[in-house]
Image 1 (cartoon, helix red, strand yellow):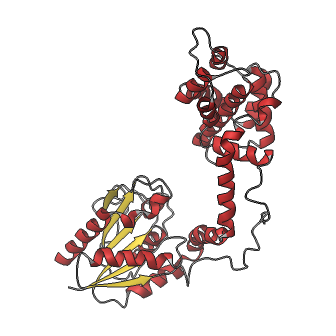
Image 2: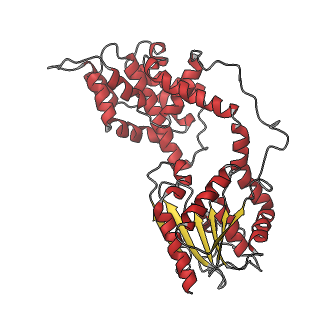
Image 3: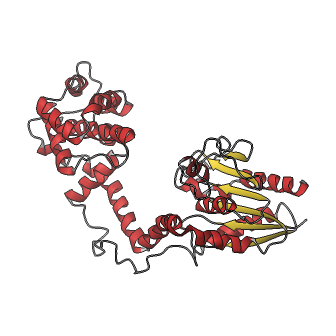
Length: 403
């Protein structure tokens, strides 16, 4: 029995990436069986998005800045807050690690009073007004509890040495950053209306209320020498990626998604034209946005006939739940059409762009979980190197052969 294997890629994929992945599909499935014909369905080149005006809509950046030049205070400060919004205790961690103290204190340590002060800290009325304006007032007490419960906090307090200004500054920034993260978790990524000027005034006020006499000493703290390398590498990597065509890649990744929402029929027709001439048992392997395209295509009034759909790292199930799937409106009692093919859905919990479908369409989708042991976004492209992915796909192909 002959099989036609069609590979449909996802968002942002262009050559030579597509051909490289296609060769993996050929190799992995070709090793498991004979009578397989492989067909490319590369829509990214002829139908993918691009910056048609050459990027005239993009703000320009300073390409002349030397990668070896010292960070300005503004660059350092911006980079520091970027890190704090990822890990509010990063300054405290660095302070604990970089402390030179090796003496065992028999009495109260320099950080003892600061610890008591922070644990019992309650914002003043003036500070409360600023926190309310920033929108994070309701989260400060919870953020405080989270911080004092962390090992990095205890380490920093235990190793604290006079003068304590940079410890107070690190605590103040940690409190604002942690409160901001709690706000984000409750209200969403873009709901926080806190600008840098208000944020800095809040930090300075907290530092004063924790006992500092001069907030300017710790504003650009001594941590700078230990963390500047991390910030510099982030800035340099960003510049390098821009110089290697970052904007074009960005337009492809996000642009493909937006273009599909606006002109998805063109992509569905492209996939249809690849599938319809085939004569064997048809297996479609579709990654990410490719899976959405294929599901929408198979939900059209006259869908092409295929025998097995394999979606890998796909968002089709969640789009249906969000009522954003083109081919079918959400209905809790909705069922896939009888002619819809067998559907294998492969996902990874570490891939935040993969979703499960068995609970959405019971009995019609088989979910298969893998673990790439990669963090996101690397996990989204790691499926092709996992043996279990190919074993499971081949098992489903054998089931099709026996139908």
